[in-house]
Amino acid sequence: MIFRGLLSFLPYFAFIALPLIAQETVLQVAPMQADQVEDATALVTQARARIAAGDVDVAQQMLSRVLVISPNSPEANLALGDLMLNRHRYPEAMERFETVLAIDRRVSKARLGELSAATALALDARRAGDQQAALLCLNHARESLQDDPTLLHAIGIQLYDMNRLAASNEVLLEAISLAPDEPSMYAVARVVEADRQLFTAAERHFTEYLAARPNDASAHYGLGHLLQMQQRNREATVQLNKSIELQPVQTESYYQLGQIALDEHRDQEADNFFQKTLARASNHGGALTGVGIIAFRKKTYRAAAASLRSAVVASPDYQPAHYYLGLTLARLNNKNESASELKLAVELANKQQGKETPLPAEPPP
Image: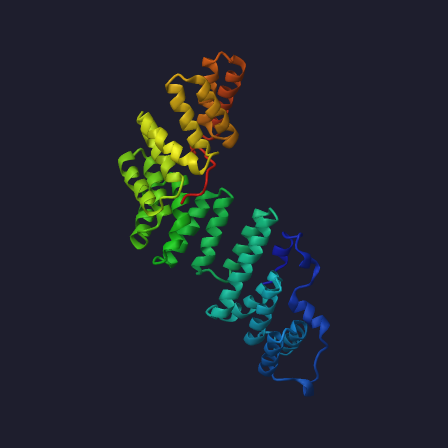
């Protein structure tokens, strides 16, 4: 397939002005006379030797000659595709791999090359800040690799990052159906399902993953957090403690255990967990908020205000920090600032309605 549609979305690539290799080589290489026709396989072998010797430009010219003689030569297309891939000329590499896949989609080297080039091109687009172009790259490759679970997984991640959760979930489930015995396929699916509050499906995928990898601390944390979102605190505590047992040096399981204790008004226990969190992540917005709430309950309002001010700096979109700071400032007779914080808390609550409260923190263990 001609790649012009994709290229039009990627103006920031240096090679954008270059014609596609199939057109470029025809213009650069003069048509060969009948008595000059060389054996394509021999030329490809010679070209590979040139590549091994570091003479890449000559190798590219030799492979271009083969494509003039035999445009659909699998050997020449694969070799030139690999060469273009190594030179980071990803659309041209994909053209070569797709020529092979158009004839036989089972060719493993072409499949791997197409996947590698597409994901690299998508990564370049992401780095340039063009999420739509990244998605276009991956979807283009999907036309040739409809049954590749790794590509579908990458598309699911891209859709998730673009906040297209329903579409992401659909693609990720398709990837899982193609590779049900690969635990890594479940990772993003459970996150998406949790965000969509598809708790039953997310819990099933966590359970299936942990059956295969029972010593994954991050998965135990994830399942614990999922159970906590459903207010199944006793089950959540078991999973969070298991995460700590497997990886004692972390923050998030301690924080979630502190949040459970705080919600159940076991303030001293909650404070212990929050202090463990802050010992490793001093700017953890959730733990700072928790410490502030405990101080508020004790009516030590100045200490509460100090902690909550730090919390809103660390996590400016964390609604509970603004809410409790507003209440605390009211107790300190700072009415104007209190009103401002409470207004912001209401705005954040409305904005985040139906979503889990955002909390910037270190990645799960």
